[in-house]
Length: 417
Length: 104
Image (cartoon, rainbow over all chains, first blue to last red; front, side, top):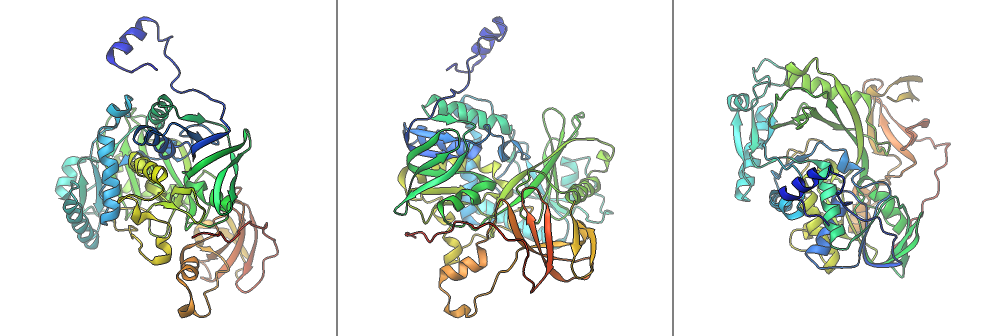
């Protein structure tokens, strides 16, 4: 495997870029693995990578129905932040944030992590009180955060209408300077390359059609393309399709799958060097390195697996963005798409053992999974390797919906949906 | 954009007049105090979430404000029927394999 460096770039440039190696193999699956990860998105690949790297597991496979990062990893708005209100969630997302900060070096792959700051706007007095509470909670948990007033917001984002004459005036914001964006494809590819290098078999275009359960324990998966693959432990990391997988094993998850959509504009000159989010008017925007404005919308309120969003939501989001940024009113939108997000009743993920032995689920990240990719993989790999949750994961069991220990991040953490 | 037939107004109206309210036919346990944590948790939080046919409760919020049910395909988004609360659906859902796990 070529190590990427200035020297290798130079050498390959002299060879007309013709001698780059493939970044991962395309292996035929073996009959048995110690660990199978179902789902080759960012979280699944990160899980496999940390299983191999941190826990030195050599018999690991990732099984992906489509192509790597073709689901929500390639469909989100790439925002990374950790300013969650409750301790359990804050620790988990901050764990991810710390991994993000060294990720490009760790993977030897540029994930283009750009800590350009994230601003969560407040539009009324209650918003501002909630923001103050959240920022204080963040600081107590060692997470950076500041409360900005409208004037400071205007200084950071000159194109935003902070005049106070809008229907939902900008009164201020919470500001996390260490937050930012990363390149979503690169995250999936970097983890895939890293995992493959450590001996993980990445099997693409292989659909899991059943989870084999014997005496209350999972023993393998049935696939459409490669038949039965046996496994010691199975970790499902399938986002919106987690419920389908759980159904195969014979139980339900406290999850509903909804389409969440986003769109990007034509590329324009740099006008926005940070990320602006607003829960109240329900839109968020950043500008990619190509110049596209990346705009996130809300979820459709009904269960859907269609990987497209509804038109009313597009219109609603366009209204919100137009009111915040009148300057973009004549920018054309280039593309629009939807991803299927797995929402839980408390807007917190599930990292958990299940009623079926040797079967584990990492799901329920809902509308905000991308930011957690490294942390999610790191913690879930630990759960898979040891069979019991570590300190970061233990609060995120699916059984919290039976004992009532919910972590209610809905609305609390600037979760916009 | 859904074009939804409201069984009370007896007219097709656009999606924006309606609000989805989740899975239909959820029966509150008759004696809530006698429920185990599992039964109560199942009632509160655990939903079907099928990839395929689904029965949902909707409200005609910008119209008659009444609740009614929809049978809808969650992949193609086709609406197969709408019916009033208290009525039975005509479209039969496929059998779902749900066995009681031995552990947990």
